[in-house]
Length: 154
Ligand code: ZN
View 1: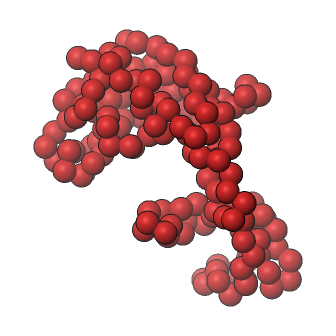
View 2: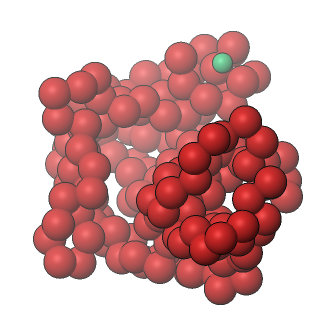
């Protein structure tokens, strides 16, 4: 079965940046499952998977616009320490889950703490990066009615 709308795809992947540095991998874990056509994965990768089948391997280079977007300087903001309710100690490098403008989960990274002022970055950690995916497709099947309703693979 070839990958198209209403397919659930399972694949193994290795993600590296332009310097060949490994950012992520499914090695040693279950393959990643997604519902094709539901924007579960970055568009640049989803587009390249279209029409492929189990057993296929591919190398995909994804530009930021088709990946996690460009870095938006407006998402770097200074907020008061009091904005972090319940967190006792705030340090550079910490990450928090916040609510984005569309109600979706947004990852916030603390860049700097200076007195009562905390500088945070709401850009995705991979924003602005060219992504290289090494993909092996493990399985392609038809999505269930429930998966289509939920908009993701089970
Ligand atoms: Zn569900």
